[in-house]
Length: 99
Image (cartoon, rainbow, N blue to C red; front, side):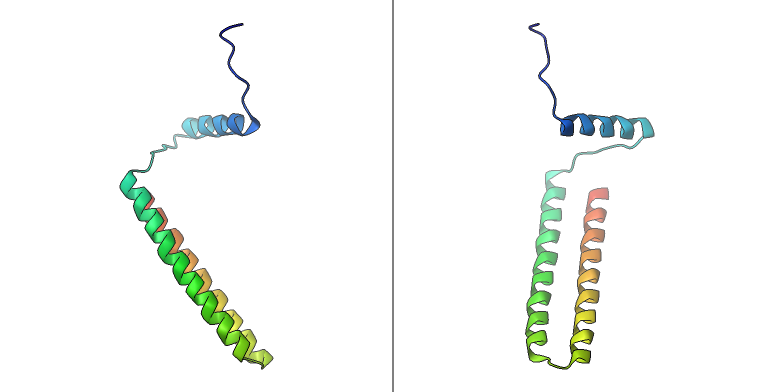
């Protein structure tokens, strides 16, 4: 009884199954280097700041606009810009991960 292993949580069991499934499929997992982690954090901070800036500008424009058509146009432009920034951020992070 002394060599009993402690019980594992459902999350730990699921992670082990996923790791085994990846290994069986030939997916290689490489840990990120410190430089990659720093570059990813910098990219996230940069794009999060851009998104926050866009949100502030959008809210300012929305407060000044009363015409429903203008508000709809502003909302569409904001959504498009936000999606573009999120896409750029994700693409940049993926590029950093690949090395």
